[in-house]
Image 1 (cartoon, rainbow, N blue to C red):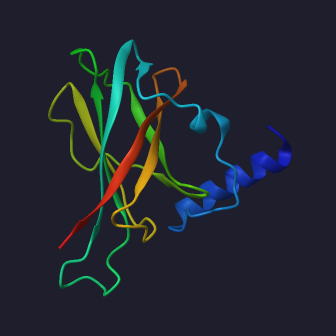
Image 2 (cartoon, one colour):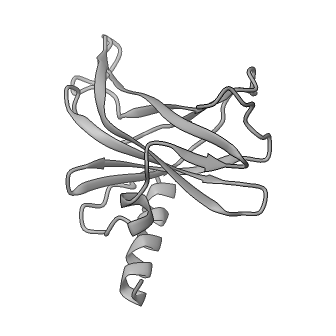
Length: 158
């Protein structure tokens, strides 16, 4: 990775941390583009499920609220997820535009086989379009693991 690429990637994370995070010019790291739909982390095979939506309820702005990404990382082989596996960030890829954001585990883990995560205040894309979602995980040693969910729809709630 060139110095310019590293700088652009770092800038996209800074923008995400500031609430923007949408950068159609910053390249998506090759590890994100290469992510598969199943991954092995902490010795457990995992997969990613998503529910992406924008709220258009009567109390919302006329053009709807920003994108919310509901994410579920779950065991693909009926093994419990190691408690030492943590999600770090998410990339929502809409053609050339990318939203990079930190994820949060807002509720305590209630089931050993999955963990629910959320990223808030995204772009006002969709509803009715499909995007790719890539989640960055870290194991107890700090190793990075990327997992993808392809062609995920952005829903509308009213």
